[in-house]
Image (cartoon, rainbow, N blue to C red):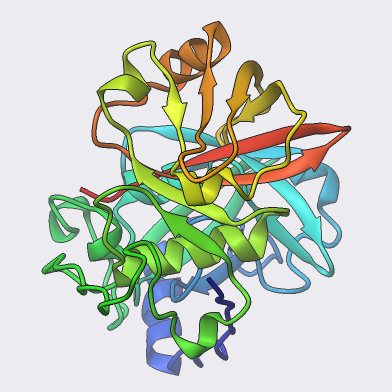
Length: 305
């Protein structure tokens, strides 16, 4: 199955909005000193955030390798920082901050590097009004974040293989498969696209909901079609999660043929599930690549209810 993505131009921020936002942010001393920037949250803001070009160019030592990001919630998140081209990118841990702050498409955030490795954000709506927690979605999820608040999935077109779906033209190039009984939605397609674009992967993406076997110390198994895309000869896989740099080694068993399955099991898988608190019904996307001769499986948990 094929798919890809395209980026859209950053909308211009109205002058009155800029005035309202920056006026409301006082008395942050960093305003106007090159230690602040205004960001419009639109497509592709959940998995990472690219700061405007030029921000932090002379402050690299104040942001690498990570910053503590805080907003209106009482939680503070450690977020990894990468240099991508001419931009500073907030990456590992950013999605947890987005979920905690209940950011949705159309919001504006004013970020201030108030101290070395400390980034503070205040959130504003599309009219430039400060947005307290009471004005944010009470039950945030990916449907709400991308403006599909009803959360109704789009039924797939009838095809011979229930896991094959028509992919929008702007996603040409992406390869993926859906697990049993999982239906494609706009937010899921966007999340798949985010992972496909931003993380190196050598095999199709795999999305599914975790079942009892997955989270109760059992095995994680792929569908037959997806299993047959994985190479033979690999008996160990390395599991990782975007929240941190921890790695877990797990056993991989693979059978080929019409009823072939690939299963990830053993203490490594059990420890991985326990460490990150995976639960029954969690929606996950797996990105798999070859790394130092071993299959590296990165597991993304999506905030979809």
